[in-house]
Amino acid sequence: MNIAIVDDQTHFREGLKHIFSLNLLKSLSPSVSTFSSYEIETLKKGPKPDFVLLDVTYKYQRTFPLISYFVNNNVSVVVFTNEVSKEVVMDCIRAGVKGYLLKSMNTKEILSALAIIINGGTYLHHFISGILIDEYNKT
Image (cartoon, rainbow, N blue to C red; front, side, top):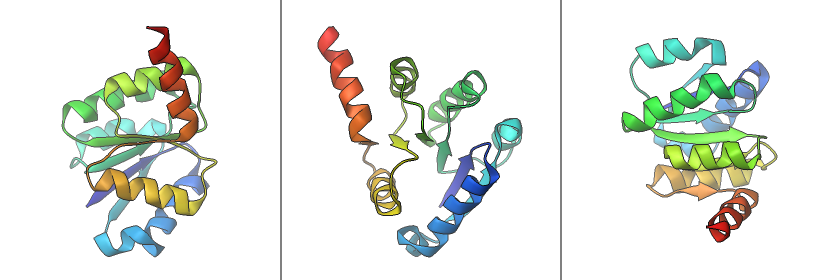
């Protein structure tokens, strides 16, 4: 399984990669690559990952086309961010992300959410579920 992490914070990318190598995902022998938002084109040109974990906070205009690109190429995209604005959340869900995780989640929650997604499910942090329900009730 190939996982790509896109985040502009090097320590965060490397920390998440380390968590994957030590915990639940270790049994899946993941190959984890990390990229900053400035390296997005590199990610698109290389072999397609199975999963992309992506922060939309800093470079939303740059990363949203990446979400669409990978979803359209059958790659599972998981947003992993602090961004909770209704507009961004709804755009990501409409684009077909498989998960929306918040960086405030603890390691156990992150790994549980990713296990659900890896096994074909979807996962929305409870705060994001509230936004989705509020938006649905408006229509």
